[in-house]
Length: 66
Image (cartoon, rainbow, N blue to C red; front, top):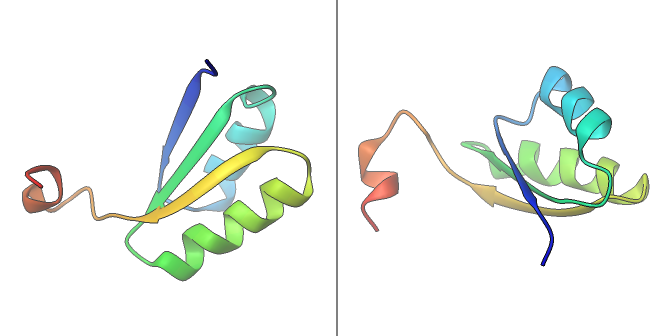
């Protein structure tokens, strides 16, 4: 089973961190804008990383109660 990295926010800094520590790990990218999450996921996948994008808003408590 792979270790998992969870990125909350699909920004450039988080993408750089994922590139640095994500080798051999599953990278799950969450952002409140699904297009942003998918864009970062695509870039990292094309660079050889195992990624999954999803939509989430960590400022909303209801996101965690499902």
